[in-house]
Length: 504
Ligand SMILES: Cc1ncc(COP(=O)(O)O)c(C=O)c1O
Image (cartoon, rainbow, N blue to C red; front, side, top):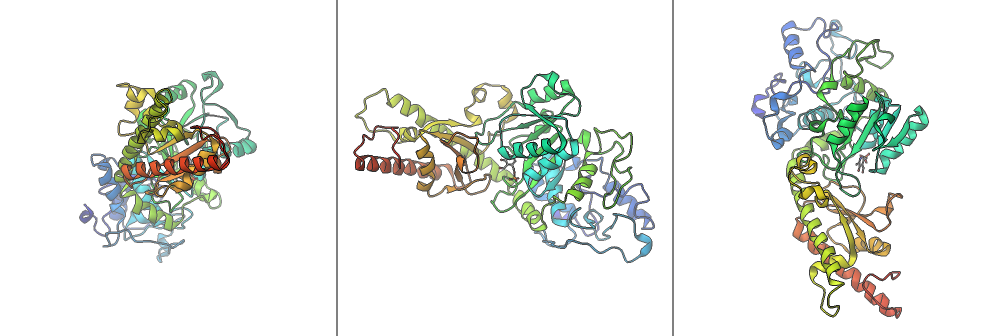
């Protein structure tokens, strides 16, 4: 496949990605070779999504969807760090915001606050795997901010979930007067142009929400549905399939996958991405003026307009991060399938431990605890989509929405706050750190960064180490914690007594 990508070839594999310049119309590339222009224009028609790759597997797309941007013989994508790109030396070929790279028209740039080679490749792969044209941002929260600034809704319906998104909403409420309403508010509260924002699975519990239900609610009220699918990247969830208008990701998590880059992503449903007057408007200053014309259809042309707004917000990813992102996406499917499957095994083991401990408390107290029930002496409950009732109901919304697995983040509620505070330091394979989605397993005493949660809550992000090793690490950690507690209880002369609170 890579072999099909000769220099100057571009475009015969993927058509239409978010980064593309409107080469057609508007006198674009005036004076350039007509045949080359026509071919480039056809290949760059932004209304044509990269349908030509959809028959390939997810991994084939993560490895090849940006091949058409290869202008070099290198197999690994080169790293471009330039912030600015030379204009054509022929004055007759100069046109505002058009700077066609004759070596590969797809890879044409002016200034890296608008677009740059590494992030363009990243967006090409994301567009292919998310099923909607994708733009990248400097962080997940920057992408949420960009979405709110763009849609400018009067009301946003939102439920639990990542506290940072609530922080952005509060800031926007102060600036624009938007009202924050409950996700499950009556339909009559919402109107056209409002936004229903659903996070699924939820941070920090890993529990899922029914997207079809919220898509129907959005349709009834004329609101848009945005889905924060950070916890369920491909292949776990396709929010467009269930009616999303726009999909958001903190690409910092699974897309980055190695705890070394910040990234936000907005992918727009094909019905909104292009058209409707985008590119017709009058720009001012640095704005390219996409879709700012009067009488435009506001349900269309989102990608060029979001991109124009990103140019003035300045919330683009850095080039190095873009390069890291491409490197990381190559292994997305391998990582995510493994992490999700291993998380499910750990969750089952822990839930069995909780159940065994509950059963043990009513049986002979002199019999030694089983290795399983040791988990239950530290953990009071576990939360994860795989434990939701619908996960064991054939043909439930949850089984249909997440047929490939339920994600690699779950939470456990310890029996008391001290256990939650102290367990992470007893573990060897789990780093005690915030964030998730990396190849390294993480555990976080969530009170460290989220004031809104129960202080007994530990959030776990499962990496790629292998579930048996992770289970054994947890087991030794539980044992060390219980031993420490018993020692301290002895020293203070108090009764150890199972889950009794002892300050450690
Ligand atoms: C569900 C969810 N959405 C958004 C974000 C924000 O992403 P970022 O840290 O990349 O800004 C996070 C971060 O943890 C998250 O978990």
